[in-house]
Figure 1 (spheres, rainbow, N blue to C red):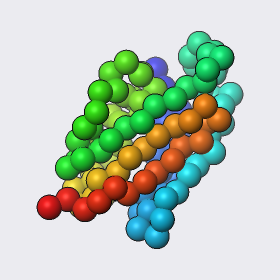
Figure 2 (cartoon, one colour; figure 1 turned 120 degrees about the horizontal axis):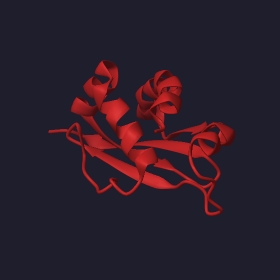
Figure 3 (spheres, helix red, strand yellow; figure 1 turned 120 degrees about the vertical axis):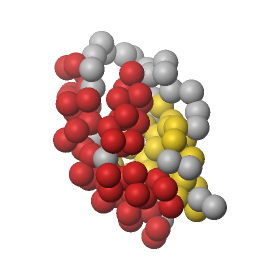
Figure 4 (cartoon, helix red, strand yellow; figure 1 turned 180 degrees about the vertical axis):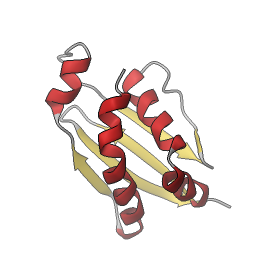
Length: 107
């Protein structure tokens, strides 16, 4: 459902994931893109994806928004390489700000 929207952000997400070695990164998303596709929610769209050892480590199936992003990230070769080396947390807040945080290196 949200795959087309996330596809346009993947190149930027890839760059920001590389930059997390220097600190946490964030990206302001276009709220209207997401509201056009899905039903508008007063609480906004909010999720957190924990990526550990190259896989999603937490339950995100209840959020199509998070599931679609995670799927695209795991299909991207450059992101897969980053995920093989490091663990990340990717979260979206109600103001449509995507936060990327490196949470440690893989063993």
